[in-house]
Each structure stands twice: as C-alpha cells, then as structure tokens.
Image 1: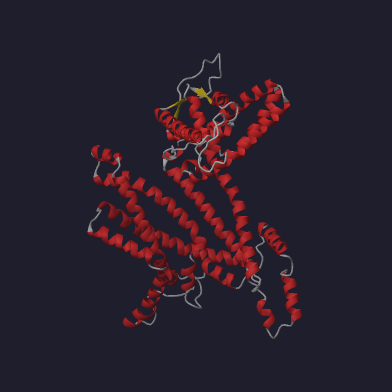
Image 2: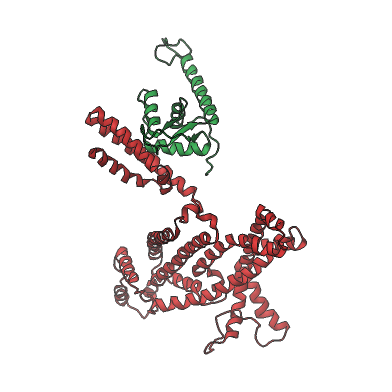
Length: 414
Length: 126
C-alpha cells in the first residue's frame, strides 16, 4: 500500500504541470485512474512493467500538459484571472500577480540594457573633443565602469537599484531618483487631467448617442470619433500651437497667447501659480484628449446599446420606474463597468505613454525625460524610467482586474 | 463553456478509442483506459492526461456527457464520475468508423492487408 502511495505522491506532484483549472476539474480522477492502473501493473509482478508504465505516464504528461497550458492561455477568461474565493483568494491573487511581475521587470530591464549598451556609446563624443586626451577619455570610461563586461555593469546597476540607490546620470551626474519623481508628478498631472476631461466628455457624448441612436447627434459624434481616432497626435498638436501661439494672438492683438504652447510654467516664474499652470496645461491636455474622448464615447455608446436591449431593463421599465431612474440606476451602472477597466489601464499607461505630446509641448514629464535620456544613451536614466513605467502598467492592470471583480458580481461565480 | 468548435473528421485516435469504448456503456475514467487497451489488443495505451484532456474536449463538443449515475458505494468509490456517449457522439463515431472502413477496403483492394494475395496490378513486377 505504501509503495503505491509513493508512486501516487510523485504523480500528484507532476500534475502541477497542468493549469489549475484543469487540475481542479480532473486531478482526483486522474490520480484515481493512475492508481488503478498502477495496482494492476504491480499485480502483474514484473518490475519492467512499472518502468514501462512510468514511461507511458511521462510521455502522456508532456504530450498533454503543454497543449492544456497553451489552451488555458488562449481561452483565458476573467474568471480564470480573477479569484473567486473571497477575501483570502483575492489576497493570494494579488500577491501572485505581483510576484509574476518580477520576472517581467527583470526581462524588460535586461532587454533595454542590452539594446542601449550595444547601440549607443555615451562617451563617443569624448574621442573627438579637443579638450580631452585619449587617456582622460579612458580614465572617464574606467570611472564610470563602462570598460567592465556588459553583465557586470548590468548586475551592478541592478543590485543598486533593488536597494533603492537609483544612481546618477552618466552624463550630467545628477541623481536619477528626484528627476524621475518630478517628471512623474508632472506627467501624472497632465495625464490625469486629460483622462478626467475625457471621461466627462466621453461619457456625455456616448450616453447621448446611445439614447438617441441614429439621430443627427449620433451621426456627428460617430463621425467625430473616427476623425478623432484618425488624427495623428503630433499633427493636431502643431495645429493647436499655430492657432493659439501665432494666429489667435495676432488676430486678437494680444501680448501673450491665451494658452501657452510650451513648458510647464512661464520662464523664470517663482512659486506656484495655478492660473499659469493651467494655461500651460490646456493644449497638451486637449491633444491627449482628442483620441481618448473618441475612444471612450464609442466605448460607452456600444456598452450602453448592449445594456439598453437587455431583459432586465425591460423589467425595470415594467416595474414602472421613471425613465431617468431606469437609465441612471439600471443601465448606466452596468454600462460603465467595462469603461472602468479601460480607464484603469489608461492611467497605468500614462507613466510611460505621453512621449509625443510631451516632446512637442516641451512638457517636463516622463516622456521627455525618456526621449532625452535615450538619445544620449544614458542607461542610468533609462533603466529606472523603464522600471517605473512597467511597474505602473503592471500595477494598474492588476487594479483593473480587481475593480472588475468588485464591480461585477458575475465575475465571482465559479 | 468554452467553444471548441464542431468536431470534424478524422477524429483523433484518442477520441475515437474513447468513443468506441463508451459505445458499450457508461464508464468511469480508468474503465475507459482499460477498455481501450483491451479493444486495441494492448496496442493503444492512453494515459490519464490524454484521457481527461480528451474528455474535457468531448464534453465541450457534446460528444459525451457526465452521467448522473453513481456507483454503489459498497462496490466502488462513489465519487467516481461516469461518462455516457451522446447521440452526436454515436453519430460521429459511426461516421469515423465508416471512413476507416472505406480506407481499409481501399487497402484491401490494393492487396496491402496480410492474408490477401499480392496484387497483379500495374507497376507490379511479380
């Protein structure tokens, strides 16, 4: 009996090769089948048969576990990703997702490090600088550690980073952490304002479109959304800059533009001036919002139309509720769920995503930080930037999943 | 339930053997494995992974259903799950068997089976 149990124990451990949903469904049956067959083989009494049996089992395992794993990835559903088992399950799920984030971060940093270090030499300019001798260039290279093998440089960077020492820029010698922190704050302001504005406009437009489907408003909104999605960011930004920076000031005989076309504040300004900040913020925010509004309004329109035709809405009307209550309490609540997820993902993407807009408006955020750093090959700046951006994406993906589970009770069933 | 699409001929060997075994009656997992080994003269040995991977697919495709029957707890573990072939499964099994039979007839007509005299057809030198 104990002999059988030993075999079964090994088999049970091997079953972890299968995805957990498959295991939950069939583990007991598979172990049972394994045990039954094993008992028969042992009864036959020839040691060779046990070995042959294990060979069969192992090939069977390899041949079937891989397709099951693949299928589980392809057919992944919310209820696979989001836990079902109450608070403890949720906690375990969060921890697991955060642990999975570590290899993703490592892999991303290795790739970026390899690409940057093999393509750009930050000291390339040193050789042609007449004030530098070959020796001083070499010494500089040694001081910065650039003469060491690639993996040593990477390992050194990683161990420092993990301990909170984000190092100094290779070129300007400025500490990286405060620079990234302020860039992140600026980007967060811009991105969050843009998303908040887009939410208001997008929900309004989408809602009205869905309630008056095929009206002239709906047609205009649909056309506008396609234009908004199709217009390139940089082009729209240039149009706005010309309009506000050049033409409007000329036509209206102003001494300074209504909305500024570059920077965070007026040059040389001291302290915090809200109005000045806002006047700098409006144009980049508009540029960002054009696409987001278009996207959100389509999103809301589609999910509202779906909800409006559902049975429970007919029930709500049949109960005699006012139309306003039907729309607000019954339809909108459900129609907004998918958008919530999308917004969470968008917020996560902000940290690394506003590169074009920030570059055009000279806005000192994460995007411009990245462009500057990578054009100089300053991996000491690029790598922490990347880690921050990826972390944001991962964390907000997780937030989106959790919000979905919280908002939609259907997600929790097994 | 995930949609695996409609099953198409030819069936995979594992699916065919499992359906063939279930055609005689309801069975639980190990009984299917055992029956498959017997009806193939021990030539086909399906492991638990292949078995339950196929069962999962066949349940989704509606070829088999989980039977409500539970064995007598005195005779057998009552937690065992039994499976039954459906009409659709039986139809597909028949179609596959006919397809195989047709192939066998072709092989026969070309004198490829053991026990049939060698052919005297074109390109045959004997």
